[in-house]
Image 1 (cartoon, rainbow, N blue to C red):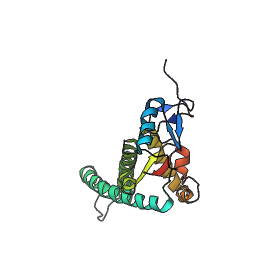
Image 2: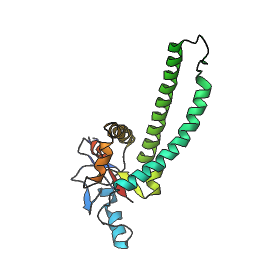
Image 3: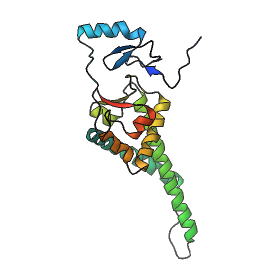
Image 4: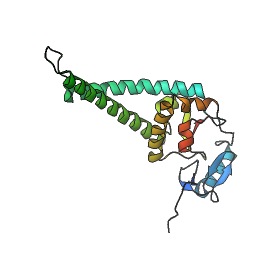
Length: 202
């Protein structure tokens, strides 16, 4: 019989598999499943692993990481948008007698396509890297940070996608969701609170 994991599911910091609180062993701030417990204890004895308190990624270092990711996305988005728009979009030339309504409709279509393409690129970028074994976007990796669950496990693809859209919400409310990183004890933004994630220094 398979175990049903609900909202209270925790994750092993070593293998990332879901488990229950009763099954997990706590090593400092990390939760380790029975399958990984002996190996992790051996790492502690050998000095390979550590039970040091978790260090969270603060506001300014995350701003810098976001800037790196934004630059990468601007390059990728520029290439993709340019190729796409050249192949599928035609804007009527402004000439005497041109229908303004048709021109505006065409321009609105262009901006709609650009917006959707950029959202797909941004979501795919964020979800792929954060849910991978890297547990971070290139910007966060460059500055030594990872996005993890509270117990140290990695995010599922679905949670990573949800976190991306929660970040959009954080930005929509005048950036307040991001400002919360600077005042929360665990350096969580609104998107981290919604998706139950932490940004930690690796």
